[in-house]
Length: 120
Image (cartoon, rainbow, N blue to C red; front, side, top):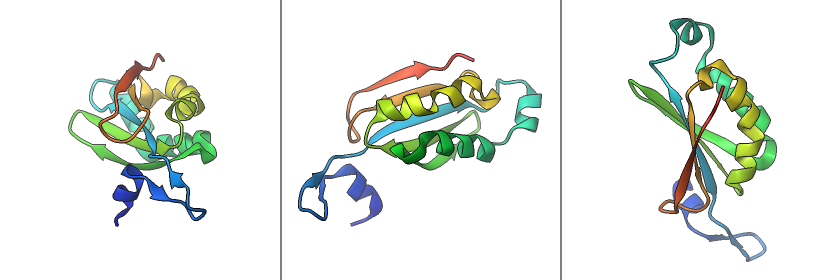
């Protein structure tokens, strides 16, 4: 079974109890509308490092997908709301997060989602 299947489905923990499916945060960053100086001065890896520090042991950053107009950063953990509150300060203060949106998914893929726009 691959890692994604283990995240999506319930797998027995070492003690025999099922592990609940992971919840997720999807952070969408604007990749074209911010002032050019922001893209020149700040890089995505530094932003991701700040997210990981803020997240602590609540979850993990599991990669990103970059396209011509935006970048989506994937965070997974046991409690999406707690993860959001942990990274909220970074989202509100980091220049690359201007105009960003966060989608919170409180369950496995297919679970209802809600979106929060950051204000900074």
